Amino acid sequence: MRSKSTNVLQGIVLLTGIVYIIVGFSFYASPYRVFRLFSVGTEVKTAEAAGGSEEDGVKSEESADLSAEDWLKQIVNDEIISPLYYVIRVFAALLLVSGIAMVMPLFDPLRYRGLVYYNGLIYPFISAVSMFLFIHSQKSINMEIASDAGKGAVAWQVGHMIMTSLAIMFTILFVLTAIGLMITRKQAREGKE
Image (cartoon, rainbow, N blue to C red; front, side, top):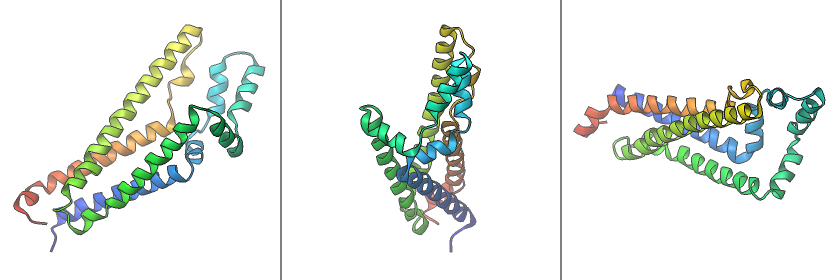
């Protein structure tokens, strides 16, 4: 019979696996739709960032509003965006497989404890820290560009919603897994479930 602390860890592992599967599948199926879902207000930001005449704002809004077909055509023709698009899909498949692999610790938490450390602790920690660093550097660079151009950087202080959401999600998964591993540490040393 498994203890309550092991059941808590297994619940956290299951949650982590489900989140990885959902995020991985979403990005693998269509990165465009995921980015579009989180890009609320891009037209407003683009128009504010332009800071020019009303015509410039309208042009910016129109160029930011691409259909899925136009966006996919742009991917095929761009030598930088095309590899990025397919690399995102490959890493999404890796995240999907990692989520599926999180099923193994549900059956034998002691044997697959290392997998929990890697997929539930190390990966979300590195991902969250990287996302927060990317957000910070992006804001700094955009504010510097705006100040050099003599325009306000108010539109860039929000950051990208998807990066912020993923950083928060990975941080929560890291904290939950760390708590689950801490409360089962003594039992793992004793070889109990």
